[in-house]
Length: 483
Ligand SMILES: [Zn+2]
Image (cartoon, rainbow, N blue to C red; front, side):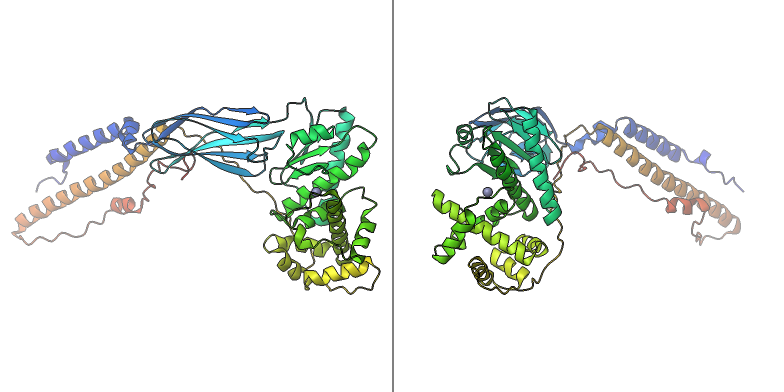
């Protein structure tokens, strides 16, 4: 009987093993170039600068180099403030491997906020659909004055006239009024607020380009978190501060709670309600208007107030009067629920869902109250604490990087998989050959030619079968390319 040890008879097997080992060694040491056939696109951003010119705008520049793909589409993303609104601007480019582009966000086009960090990045789409996003940079667009600045958790105060104690006073008035609204109406500030204090009417109106009425003493842009205010260092300073800052902070808090615009009279009524000082004439103005039937229809002041200062004064007076009536007679908790309903419903629907009656019914009770008639009030349907709207925007800052290590790792994993299968198949092949040889020898000895081999059942075989294959390598991870 011949030996059952097979290797000395298996030159083809030894040759195959040698080739496979050489093959694997080759793969291991040449993994990146071998797998580079995947042609991973790489984008290098060489210039992402920006220049701000007051009253003109901000020019954003981009130079980028693309390899293994072509540029297809370009967008500029600008976030106004660290947690503020992000706007996207499409920029025309030509398909190619070099991108040389710029985009100017004009001063007049977008109520360009001043004194606020503008966080910007470029999003380049390639012709294979992949996105390459540049690192985020910051540019500040601001008035040419020399500003002092005091920055806290929710508020930054900027002023150019007055000393540090003046700035501290402004800061404290702003944060106190926000704290009051948080405590009373659960209005938590999540987006930073930037307040620029102007020292004179002329400076203020020059800054706002006459975009707002001449009677205004301040303006708030809730979406970008910007407030511009007049607070002259004269005998009226305390009065300005007492109504101006809490008024504008109320606009900000209301917007951050509801996250959409509400009827203008509602917004202004709530802002005046929050002021530390009130116009002493408002009560008489409203009483006269109710008695003479000259109130402005709330419908007519939903989108803005009259430019005429007398009518504007009436609009403010009746708005704060109605809001005060609503809050004081029907409660803070119901008012918070009304704000919550406003997030998803039109005003009249939100009103009815909260109070269970129509707006005009409450409006009639308000008239009665002003002129001393008896009133009947509903019990609100909704009344309780409602969560504030918290900003959950994430700022993504990713850069396209080389893939050498990822590919090398992928090559290693692939090699291990191949080695497992090679060992399994070559071992099985050799064993079966040896068994067949043994059976043949045995058959020859017994003159028995009808050979059937038993199934291969070695322990080694079962171990191989139980090995779980590693996952295939992923070359397009979201860590560096987004789709
Ligand atoms: Zn206002």
